[in-house]
Length: 116
Image (cartoon, rainbow, N blue to C red; front, side, top):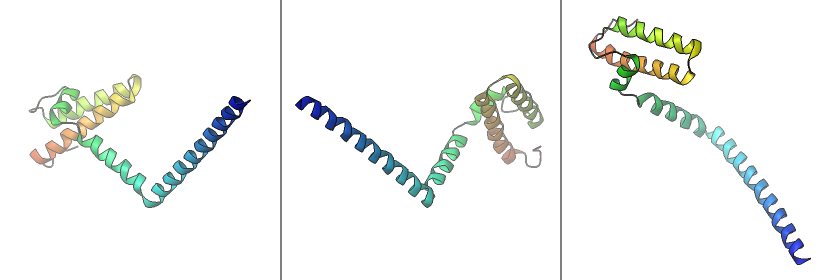
C-alpha cells in the first residue's frame, strides 16, 4: 500500500514539474522574442556561418585557382548551382553560393567594376 502511494506521488510530482518546466520555457521564449534576443542570436549565427569559409575553401568548392578570371568563376558557380538545384542537395547548393560570395568579396577588392 505504501509503495503504491509513493509511486503515485512520484508520478504526480513529475507531471507537475514537467508542466512547470514547459510553462517556464514558454515564458522565457516569449520574453526573448519581446526583447529581440532571439533575432540577435539568429543574426549572429548567420554572420558566423557566412564568415567561416576561407578563400582557399571557396576556391576548392568551385574548382578554381587564385588567378582564375571572375567570368570563369561565375560560369563555374552557375553550373554547380544549377546542377545541385536539379538533382543535388540544398546543403551543397548553399556551399556553392557561399563560395561565390566569399570569392566575390575578394575580387571586389582586387578588381573593382568587374563584378557581374
